[in-house]
Amino acid sequence: MFGGVFSVPVNNPHLRKSGSRLIITNLGENDLRNSSMQLGTIAKLRSPLILSSLKVALYVGGLYVCGKIGWESVMKMGIDTRELFFYETFLYYNPLLLITMMVWLWGVNLWVFSRTGVDYAAIFYLGPDHLSHKEIWKCARWMTTIILTSMTAYLYLYSHGDVSLAASQPIVLYLSAVIILFIPFNIFYMSSRHYLLWTFWRILFPVQTVTFSDFFLADILTSLSKVLSDLERSVCRMVHRQVATVAWFEADSVCGSHSAVIPLVLVLPYLFRLFQCIRQYKDSKDIANIWNAGKYLTAVPVIFLSALKYFIDQDTWTYSIQPAWILSGLANTFFSFFWDVLRDWDLSVFTRIFKFTKPNLCSHLLYGRRWVYVWVIGSNLVLRWTWTYKLSAHLRNNYITVFIITLLEIYRRFQWAFFRIENVWYKINKRTTSSHQTNPVSLQNDDGGEQEKLLAHSHNSLGV
Image 1 (spheres, helix red, strand yellow):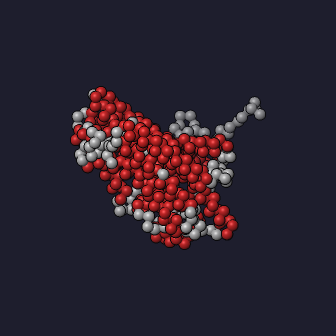
Image 2 (image 1 turned 90 degrees about the vertical axis):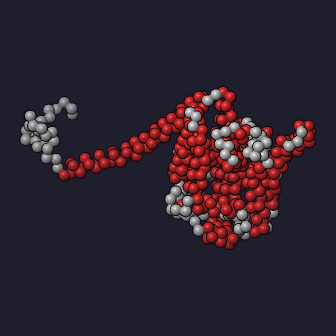
């Protein structure tokens, strides 16, 4: 087959004569069309990959530059002021970074829901223009870039002696975040911002029927209670012009670590959920809502008993208040843990959350595996306790430990969201199958079956 003589006609139009410049001549229209199609296909396949790789490289390179400049700026400071200043920097930027981490993980939640057929848009009553997981990650990417850039500029300017300009960096960042959130123009995902702000409003004033999105976001706020407290401390120092100074380091100052405002901010998310449960009981008469309210009520003594440590003598704390605080912490931990497993998740039903419509490695490792349940239940118990302990006053100045515990609580809430939303979706499908209904409104509030009409009215008033 390969050994025969291969002869080419002398008058072949595709061959060039010796000394001529054209290599290929007189190509037919079909040849040109086929060549163009092949080149176009290759270009379409390679362009997105090349562009994505370039974006990742630029993003990682930018993070490296920020880290390098920030580290060199910190090392340039004196040893005496380095730790104090780093603690202040950490206070301004760590709450925003933790919120950004929550956004990143929420994007992962939505990605899994989109791959497993869980219609989260129907559960939250989202409009057709709701954000997908890609858009959520895009927001998180911009948030990460802007926050780290501002923090790098803050460290660099302060270490080089430009204190006033350095002090303006966190202020500009916070003001920009507020402006972007409230700007009334049709930019920056206006409908989604309106939905978020309207949900916050309903959480602050639970005078209307509580929807699933209301108490779901309020539950997330309980995991971010320390973040809210740090935001309050940051704004306090900005208002009192204590940014880039050590005036705030006095514990008894208006923005110090002994302020009575700290426990008040910490307890707010739990009070929001408490009032929501009372409102749910008023609407549904379901006694389970009273038990749920009791769960959030157990967090109140944990916070306020711990805050007493800074206002009483050591013996009173050790022999009287601390034992009561420990009992309160245990009660809150186990109450919250059993409610997660038995009510929020309802693990009596075998989960299908990781059964992807197109099986992949993630689905193979997680779906139907017993270790997933062991891990989720065990980690939820441990992280529930660490979070309850973090609500105490003992760790206020140990900011690295508090940051790690808060990060772990965000992770716990991330995995909690999978089973919580799947539980609602399972009940929606079960109700739809049994009653041949297609409207999932009756299970938006799965703590009360009589909420259908009220929740439908709430959805219509939302307008999203």
